[in-house]
Length: 347
Image 1 (tube, rainbow, N blue to C red):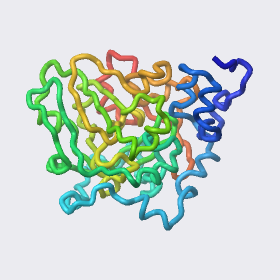
Image 2: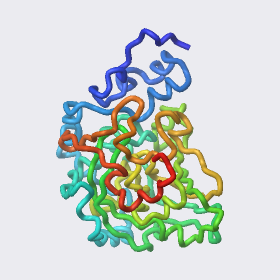
Image 3: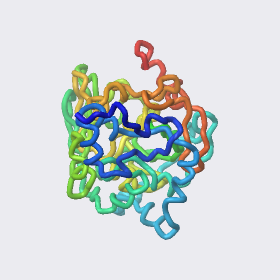
């Protein structure tokens, strides 16, 4: 293993630095080789970092031109049946967001800045690299501890009643946005397959398409495909959405088309995108980041301003559209809906 004792890396200076990880400046393979394999290398390639406001000032509007907006906002699904489902009716209980937030992140910014390692670690390049991804046809297999296992295609999902909700979204890297998701309350989908009493957890497995997702080729050290899991009581909470759209239209490819999950009281990486399988299990399944770096990414990963990441504070968050910093709210501000789930947990 390389001697790193006297080397200086940018995370030593957190929380004052640019959010760009060091491998964005150097060849990633060479960077990892220089560090040596193991937890240090994985940490260097994990979701990174709390940032300075000056760095965030370069986000969003500064990273794309007006002529690129139609491509950024292009929906992944375009069939007449799917388009007929938009816009969905707004749920009046989820117009004003926790913290009395009423202003939404501008549409193109919410679609032009995101994490999606299956394409790239560069947040402002995801939308470009995702345009060749084909979200149609698609199916989701639901198996495991249930009486009625199912395989649902796109039309099957869109037959469930959907609604629009404005939610806060918080990345573990301490950036945030406020956006209107369209989706189906996930408990309705789970109820349709009749979970048994043995169903204690829900595991998601995402798509693996290296020919369409260059990050799966360029970063082979990750255990693709992406996988995530929750407790069944979390999954059945009425806040959780199987998301079909964003800003009143079908999801763009870079935001997880055709379907993604939103569980708004957890950090962003707990919200799987483009998943193809849901499995109800008796035993607790592993999760992607926790299985690699458990000391940095807990299995529950609830938003908590008092629990810092080992390399940065979680006390505040930065809005991606204007660089303004605001206090992080426990459970993202959704405590009245979910706090009772964790009475016996350090979460």
